[in-house]
Image (tube, rainbow, N blue to C red):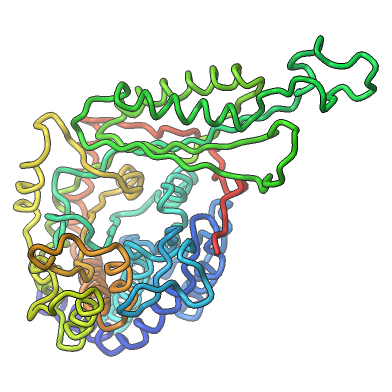
Length: 513
């Protein structure tokens, strides 16, 4: 049996090698589209068409989300394994795949760009499932591959909805991949410390009854109830600013200074940019916060809800709130982590060849830095075992803290045994005395084919070989399920949003150009 599985794995890895140039072309296409959250129309359509050409049955716009999909391919009765694509880009990070700072052609620097990069995340997992599919056909391995398209990851958008609608039900195992972004999580799998809770909410202030602000001050001879000469109502912008300032002033009082939590905001607009002496009718602000656990997230929520109520009253507005995301901390599965890391170790860490090194050195020269003989961060070409990564991670965390950072894969971990793994993305070793590299450098390296190829190659092979291991080893899948059931019983965490929760696709999310 071991020989049979080893042969299948070699077949899958050979497929990745033989198709690497094509995979890099696909990656460049998604990279250049660079569409922001909930607006990934062309990226999603490319995946839908590509998967149908590869023989998958694809639901376009799954769970009522226009930029999501769910694809399935089966080779007979067997386990069902799932992985996924992401493809949303980040506003304000437009960067061409070149060695100097410049936005994508035809865009401004305020347009979106792939930072993590999700372009490589999606093409890596696509490589993995297509390689696994090829090997399953060649070696007659039974099983079903489920592949979901997950938009708006930066808002924890689709995975909550897919989970609530049953898209992760009846799945035997989930493989979650992300290009490495923070040490020590580089070329490894998460062990005990998963990502924590993430809440995001939009508060909408509306001033629909401006004429009732000070009725007695209106000119009794004027036929216009909201005469321009009357004292104008404060309006929605005032409510928004009261909300913003109160939240920021109270930030230090919301939670302790330890625990790795964060708090961010974004102001949404409905295009009301024309100045007039009428009060602003509508204003929206989004708050998002990351915490190690649900209890801490709820403390922040209580403060924000209270502030919103009083800000609206002060500015003669009504307030409405709407959830964008409400994610639970992740659930660990050691069995899945062990299976995946065995395959990652067999594939090996990414290695950057002469062409990639020359590109990195060119970036250094363009920044006025002396080129390094070995410009890439040493850890990007090294494996680190999950238990050792866990040990290093815990060194900088309070003993009581169970979770760290935030990512929406956590929702998936409550439906089936899941492993979260990382493969290095290209990152440069700092030059002594020069300080950190500007953000555009890492963004550019994520789009240049010669520097992103090792990430796609290693991650694709790891996904494929892990799938083949699990398809052919029902005992290990049973162990993973038993661990999943035990952990769910010991620490139950029901979903935080109702089953009929609607994705916020209709809000005025900006397109960015």
